[in-house]
Length: 91
Image 1 (cartoon, one colour):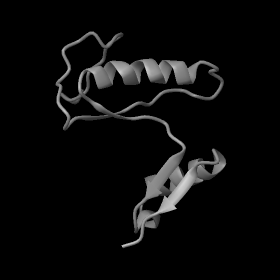
Image 2: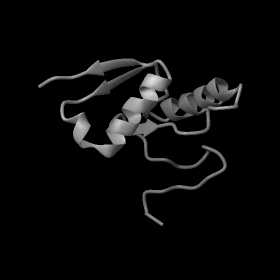
Image 3: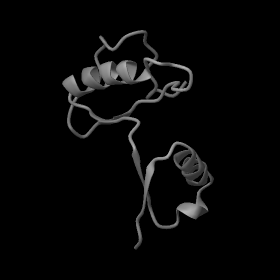
Image 4: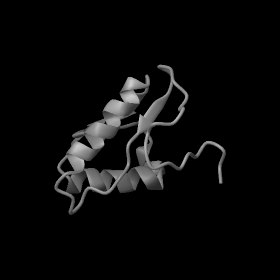
């Protein structure tokens, strides 16, 4: 396993801290009525440790040349399906 991967049941571990660290929260949303509360609780814990947290939000920014990325194309389809605000950044 990658040395940068930490598997834990809680966030009471010694994570590196500092404002240069960014965390993205990923987890199931479909079929979970309480997903916002779960994501918010994890976001608060990470922010308390100094992380900048990127959480599921209503706006997605696509950089120029996004069409050249298979992952970005999938994210575009997902964003459209979920009615997110889409910003297309031009050069």
